[in-house]
Amino acid sequence: MIPVLFEAAAADFSSFGIGTLADTISCEVTEERNGLFECLLRYPVGGQHYREIVKERIVKVKPNDTGEAQAFRIYRITRPMNGVVTVYAQHISYDLANLPVLPFETASRSPALLLNQLLAGDSRFTGWTDYSESKPFSVGQPQSVRACLGGVEGSMLSKWHGEFEWDNFTIKFHTHRGRDTGVVVEYGKNLTDLEQDEDTSAVYTHLLPYAVYTPAEGEETVVTLPEETLPIAKTELSHTKVLIQDFTSSFEGGGEITPAMLRETAQAYLKENPLGTAIPTLKISFQPLWKQAEYSALLERVSLCDTVTVRHALLGVSATAKVVQTVYDALAERYVSISLGGEKSSMITSFSQIQTSVQQVQTTVGHFPKLLASAIQNATNRLTGQTGGYVVLNTDSETGQPYELLILDAPSIDEAIHVWRWNVEGLGFSKHGYNGPYETAITADGQIVADFITSGSLVANIIKAGVIQSQDGSSWWDLESGEVHLRAYATTETVEKISGQLDEINEKKMYRLVITSSHGTIFKNSRIQTTLSAVVFSWDENITDTLDDNQFIWTRVSDDEEADRLWNAAHYGGAKSVAITKEDVDVRATFFCDLIDTATRRSLLG
Image (cartoon, rainbow, N blue to C red):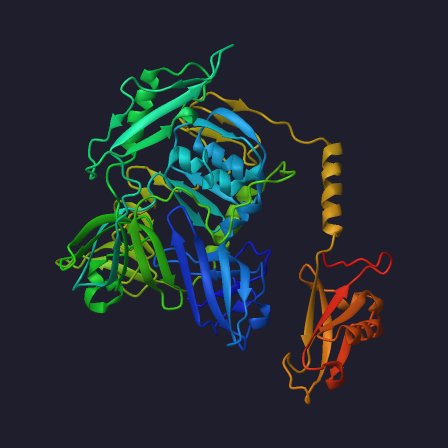
């Protein structure tokens, strides 16, 4: 897929936006299980849309072999001398790293309700989860939404575990995102490269649990087990190695903690965490056989979080592990590498640190959300005017009678990834090929399977639900815990106050000054003839013509300080551009331009 460039504020990626980046040299997407999700793109400076590639804009890229194209926001651009820029972009879900959450605490809340509560501050995002168990949850200090999801201790990821799927503006929290595909990657068949890493630094033979509590009017008490440690049943270590673990956070009621309670909690922890065995990390590259005509019937596709078997008889490797990282070549539409291994506990990466402290948060909600109208419009836009796809009628090999209607995204069943399948048992959609699974379906026994259902009116005898919630997230009824939360809407005075604050923010200008040169940026001393021009942007709007010439202050820095002082005095203000000749450069010089407020003489560039 050729990447497509969009404006920074874009929320609909169904068009071609600013344009396609057809001159892209390379484009790779790296996604980790519960971790990094970034795009690395290289583009020539002579490319058609080179000047449109700026920070904060969005590129739409295909991230893997089976998923929909995803939006990635540009956060870094490097410009080396070889004429090829490197563009770094994060998945659009990283916008949640800048959405703050103020401290709160709840004794019991379902993950579905909690997810929607955390995302309520940005109307672009919606959440989904197949978890139903309610648990205590608290935010002790201001932090970002992304940190609450999985960046810190006490986050949703650390409490419920599971696996996140970032689908543009939809945040999905799965109990198990992947599936056991039965795919075998084997030397001599499709394995092209393999590296196995076994690390026993997190392997132990015993667990020493403890917890701390403070009795009423008493001193802080540390609780341990009479036997001190619990043995780990299956361990590969021969020497004793003890893990000392604090379980205080598992007892949030504030009451007395007994050794029996501590033992039960520690044993449950051992059951969920295989501390005695090193989980090998395998980094592999393999040929996707499903793209080869002679192997297309295998239908063995692999996605992040799937379980894969890897075999290499000569190296003695035979392991079954989960896919924890994929690197995908979006241009060639094939995997560069796939890594298999254990769980990733944090979503914080070295590429972008999650912001966890904020000063203030303001959330406004609409009293009458237009969800149904939006859903109808979305469905209409997607279904109207579509001419792609392939219609296949499956027939019985003996009688020739048709028994199944298929609509595919490829000419044949073997090649298709997105499949609509309609037969006597029902109608279903799969994004994993003909054999499914079918995650959207209407079956003949009256069941409907879907992630999201939008309805105008719903009439039913029995509604089984974990949480009933208002669309704006301000009110809810948790049917499992019995918790009811009703919130009144803002008064006219409050609305006017917030509107005034928003107007004040909109009136503030974010200035950015760019210097252009009419004849390049590098010259020989005897051949210097160019004009430097200052161009000023407020947000993304060019406002240079609206500014006074006296606001532009030009300065020169060279090895001759006295000559610089004289040059700077002569160009202190009054011009948006300056002509540079050999008289202005003695061996080497660098030129700068500042934008000032003429009343205060202070810089407006921050």
